[in-house]
Amino acid sequence: MTPDQLADRLEAAAHRIGPAITHSVEHAAELGRAQIKGHASGRPGPNVITGQYRNSWQIETRRLPHGAQCTIGTMEPYGRRLEFGFIGMTDSLGRTFHQPPYPHVQPSLPAITAALRFGMLSAVAEVLR
Image 1 (cartoon, rainbow, N blue to C red):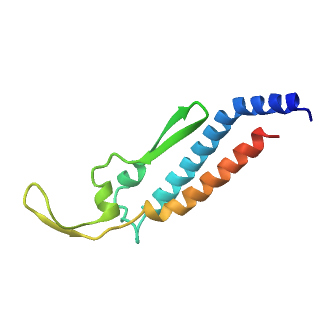
Image 2 (image 1 turned 120 degrees about the horizontal axis):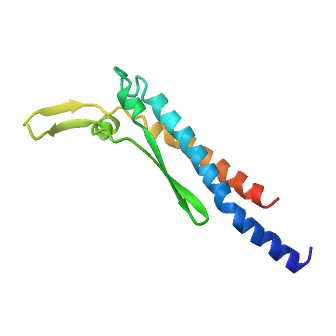
Image 3 (image 1 turned 90 degrees about the vertical axis):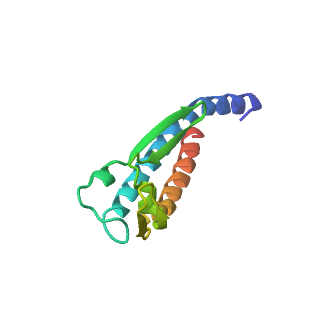
């Protein structure tokens, strides 16, 4: 392979890397949301009464020039309280709460990390073919 051929190949890969990374990031986010919802489906995570909290988890994707960014989150105001607990805290009405944490996001992080790492390796391998 000549230097010019290599340069052409790398330039072509540079144009394909953004969409490949975006696809991998979106896939990892979907797997992450599924993990979080699974861990938010009863002990040791929060109990499910209506399913509203579990179904409130959303993914927001932002495309970047050579990649993407995804945020997984919930707009439910009690999400942080469920994840981290609310022990010895007094609210604005003067009530004191002793709610233990029911982690459901933190246990999902290793699976999200693994999916993202695998996705990045696959994206790079795909565009360098």
